[in-house]
Length: 336
View 1 (cartoon, rainbow, N blue to C red):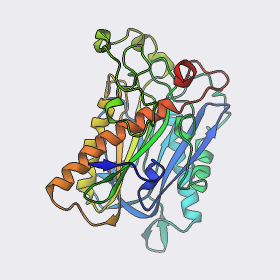
View 2 (view 1 turned 120 degrees about the vertical axis):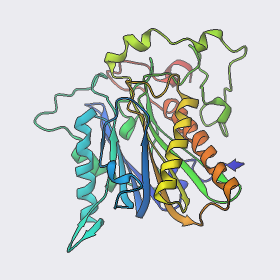
View 3 (view 1 turned 180 degrees about the vertical axis):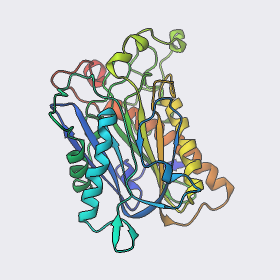
View 4 (view 1 turned 90 degrees about the vertical axis):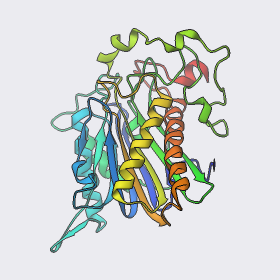
């Protein structure tokens, strides 16, 4: 049904760039998905504790149909400021929705909680996220770093460092799909206490270790670790993500693609979409390829939205790296 193209990144989707900016001292950061041209977008929330900016305009019934960029940020509610910095950079570039003689850059985004992760949050009068948002736009390129970078800088999961992940796939019927995820989940990406990823059935080309599923499958895998609840205070909640394609989609179809991509959360994390996660997926269509060529092509696209998202989530954990004052180890330190 699919192959892995190019760099196995969301930027394999024609018309997209990604930029990261991090504050290592504070253990927080921002990732911006930059659309080379305004692109159709929508979003869907399934977590019980979301934090976002300008997402209502992405509803199919609302006026503005395209975005200039999207941001994913750490910092909890402080991270909303990343949108202001990203807008400032886009205004400098002459981008934005035309209103009379003014241009208003359209930059929705979402935040995750990384406030209790070993970083120094004594940042003075203002948090760093506005400047990080500006820097991330200016850093946007086809190639970008995964793991402990951008919005994944201070991310955590259940007992491990989280991170920024990405993956892509090419449909046999034409077109490319890509996923970008900042993984800071309450749940675990690993099966029981093993090094094996829940996303293993969808892995391509050993992108997160090639370990497959454990055998025999551990019966305790179905149990929820008590430490999930013990570590809630450490901020292990929320996965925020983007699913993107170069296939031309309407705003309503982008909404449906975002819904389908949430299945990737459930394939890669146990549990997902809890009352304490702010799980949100943005969907973007750059429209460089024709619309879906019939129902079969559309179903394939939605299925790949799920599997590609699951792969991106696992890669975010797999690529995380250790840093000073970490409160959890990274996957590679334990099993790499």
